Image (cartoon, rainbow, N blue to C red):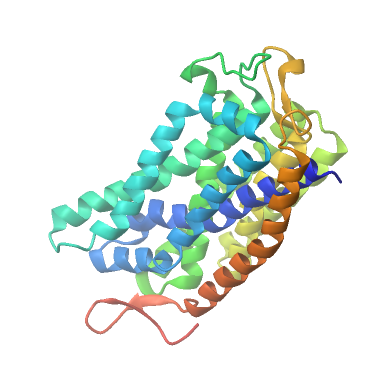
Length: 340
């Protein structure tokens, strides 16, 4: 495998890891007003992701940085085309991040309700917009021979991109509900189980639709079928355990494989193309014509081989430390229970 192909795998790994980890953060943020009827219950839901959400969000930055360093032409064309969509995404992420910090600053119901809504809206918009952008890689954008985007914002709204965005949103909500079933107690836990049951079938239907559409669009044959089989099987397992209410741990693991599998399969079907041009297939960006120099890739590989395992170990340790369920204490304050 060439270095450029290897870095394509690395970029795909970062995008996959981002959705596996940040996916349940988005889901909890989008569902916290549904699973929490009182302020304390909503704080229980929010506190379940409180120690990890900002660390998970770093994966988005790393994914973008890897694209910039390994495939600068891809980064320049793709991010320029998504300029307005990226502004909307940044607004959603900023509003969401500020909500975590500001919501508890004052006890007023109007104040907390306002920041709860910004958290909900930001958590819903982010996966929808990111899914739309990633879907456009395969659906194609009007890119000319110089790698310049020649379309308008409307050209970003490809049918496949919109469906993939909706799929990622529903999967994030399901992933978040499954996460709450292993991290919450009481009424929040009961409503999270109910949310899982209601989201399982729509998620399964969307994954099947995206899977077939991805294979047909990419024309990837056996490679695409094998890649898409992983998330399809995983979402069926999640639907089975989620509807029955058995084994919350298996349900969460299955939703993690599903959401990560959809993104990984997208990149498998996309390779060796990076961005399809709808003007002329010859204008498409590929691993070969868009990569950095061999020396740059060599230096980056050394840094990645050293730093990525350290980051993974640190994040794993963080999840271990904050592994206990969150519930309401005697004074009505969210607290971690003594049971894992």
